[in-house]
Amino acid sequence: MAERLDVLIVGAGFSGMYMLVKCRELGLKSHVFEAGSGVGGTWYWNRYPGARVDIQSLDYCYGFDEQLEKEWRWSERYAPQPELLAYANHVADRYDLKKDISFNTRVTAADWDAGADGWNVTLDTGEVIAARFVVLATGCLSVPTDVTFPGIEDYKGTIYRTSRWPHDGVDFSGQRVGIIGTGSSAIQSIPIIAESAGHLTVFQRTPNFSMPAHNGPIPEEDFQEWLKDPRAFRARSRYTAGGFWNDPRDEAIAIHTPPQEIKAELERRWAWGGFRILNAFADQAIDPAANKIISDFVAAKIREQVKDPKVAELLTPKDHPFGTKRPCVDTGYYATYNRDNVSLVDLRADPLETFTATGIKTKHNSFDFDAVVLATGFDAMTGAIERIAIRGRTGETIQEHWAHGPETYLGLMVAGFPNMFLITGPGSPSVLTNMINSIEQHVDYVTEIIASLNGRQAGRIEATREAEQTWTDLVDQSAAMTLFPQANSWYMGANVPGKPRRFLAFTGGLHIYSDICNAVRDKGWEGFTIARGDQVLHDSHEFTSLPPPPDNMAPHLMEMAMGRVAKWMQDHGRV
Ligand code: FAD
Ligand code: N01
Image (cartoon, rainbow, N blue to C red; front, side):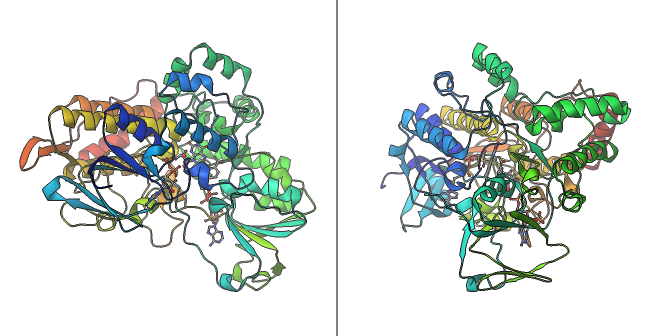
């Protein structure tokens, strides 16, 4: 590729594919590089049994083209991985995207070239490509953690990783299988593996909360509403905190509600399934007393489903408030422990010491396995970005810039790294939302930025350090207003040894975040420097685009949240 690109996109998941669509609309010369051999990102790599979405498929799909929306029919509420991958391929074929994607090609480095106002990007083929803009559509959950176990190299059975599952599937019929981890990937795969395995042993370090999906046909009420007006359906789900309609009750305060009413409301939401219970009460994510009410309700549901009270007790989370780790959505997870061929090992009481040639040895037991599944998670949000050797305008690397945790402006750009955009990057609502709506909001915004630069013949844009610091403080502060930092979660970087602890997403919600982004734009790209060669065309070091407080928040929450915001503003000399 001798000619310089306008836009080089890294990754061909839903982010990279949509970015390519938008670049083409602007007439930009753009190309995608993807490490895998096909499109789909998450849904290309994670082919483990039971993999499916935890947000209803009517919401978890592109909304940028009404025709595309209307011609695709999801087979069930929560589409399974093969259907999501088929959808990704359908989109790629429909917009003829694959001709501008190089598969099996990893981006290894990117260096800012000041003379050219652009990037030199190195591929694992050794080729170096010049590009004016780089878009990192590298995925928040695309790099498995480097977790390893003593003796694993001596193990003679087969090891599988949920996030790198063989493309032709795995037949566990009659086998002795072990699985390490009880996060979403494990919780989805355990019930299916148990159906065919001779025996399945689950190694659990920390239990998670999980809600039933009640998967099946799309609820008629939702389908009719979507059919009536897909645009209105989309607009409603986009302008919510989570990027999907989840029946929020902003006025409902658990600690002011009589117990029978609470129970009725939680039962109604539990029966609907999935994430509905997350929006039952406005105070549940910020007030420990309110949260305990929900945690206790879910704990009782676990006890109802698991026959052996000792196993139920082990499966009940006690170390984190409900919702502060990504809750799981399951199909028959807890009931799987009622099967004779499934057993649970509590690694807190019986720690894993080593793999052996034939299986796993814990402090008190040893187990022989034909296969072991690692469902051990991801180096989330920063992992894929930091694995590229990115060197910015001042010679600083991205790892150096993020030595104390990621700092970004709007989760979208990094000071010192001009013309480099992150899609759903750290500091944006991202993983706390229906990702497709967040992806579309980001890609649309990046497209607006590029169009605006081209309109004024500008060569580059960069977030100012001041704006980045102010935004990062706001992200930290809005996380501190919630119970999220109380969990040792991947949201906090706590699952990767040595990773700095910092809450990785903006907790203010996609709706508020979109308003902030729009205000930044309407103020002429507040917080950005825009330049052409040596000539600075626009230089704004401020970030003032905070929205007014939401008027639908219940009084005592408003007080609590505003008190904290006011303190933050005072501390930062903003009032
Ligand atoms: P990805 O789909 O992760 O794609 C990134 C791509 O970039 C990958 O294909 C990767 O190979 C490529 N890449 C990375 N680095 C490089 C490099 N250096 N060079 C070349 N290529 C590179 N979100 C939801 O909202 N709802 C859900 O129900 C949901 N379910 C999920 C289930 C699983 C099992 C997982 C792991 C995540 C889930 N997510 C869900 C989050 C999911 O990641 C997003 O919804 C979405 O698919 C992300 O799309 P993306 O294009 O941004 O990233
Ligand atoms: O990963 P996880 P995941 N020894 O980090 C354990 C999305 N997703 O792949 O908690 C023993 O949640 C670890 O234990 P602990 C979703 O956003 C969505 O399951 O650290 N155990 C934990 O139990 C999700 O949140 C879906 O004590 C070890 C598990 O491994 C995110 O992806 C499906 C260990 C990792 O759980 C990640 O989910 C799948 C060790 N050394 C994924 N190291 C949907 O449902 C780790 N563990 C849509």
